[in-house]
Length: 196
Image 1 (cartoon, rainbow, N blue to C red):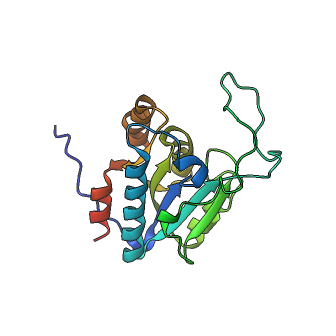
Image 2 (cartoon, rainbow, N blue to C red):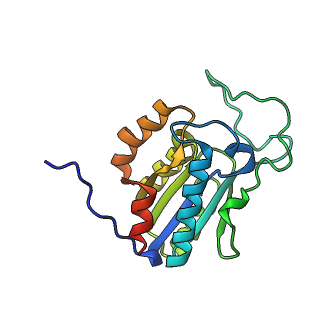
C-alpha cells in the first residue's frame, strides 16, 4: 500500500480559501512547528493563487467589544492569560493578506468561524463547496472551524505549512490524527499547483 497522496485538483469556481486569525494581535506570538513569517508567506501565496484562479478568499479574524462582554466566560481548568485591555489594532488583519474588495471578511467571537457568523450563508450563496483552510492556531481556530465545516458537509483541504500551533506537538496532533479524518492535508505548493 502506498502512502503517496493523489494529485490535488481544485475547481476555483466552487472553492473558498478560508484564512483564520491572521491578525496583528495573533501573528506576533510564537508558534510551532512553523515560524510566523513562514505561515504569513504561505497564506499570502495561497491567497494570490486563489485570486488569480477565481476562487473566493475569506479572511476571518477574532475580536469583540472593548469590555469583553461578548466573549465566552466559562469555567475552565486552564484560562487564557490576559495582561489587560487589548491594543486597538489587535483584531486588524495583517497587510500581507492584501485584502481586496471582493474578499469576504468574517468577524468571530470564539475559536470557530461558523458559530454566530454568516460564514455558512456566504459560502452557500456562492455555491462554494470546497474550503482550503489555513491560519493560526492549528489546534484552536483552524481545527474548530474545520470540525464545523466538516459537519456542514464541506470538502476540506488543509494547508499544513500555512498554519502553525501553540506547540509542535499540538499542531502534529491536529495534522496527523484529526485533519486526515475531516479532509485532505496538503502543502502550500500542492494547493497552489492545484489551482493551475
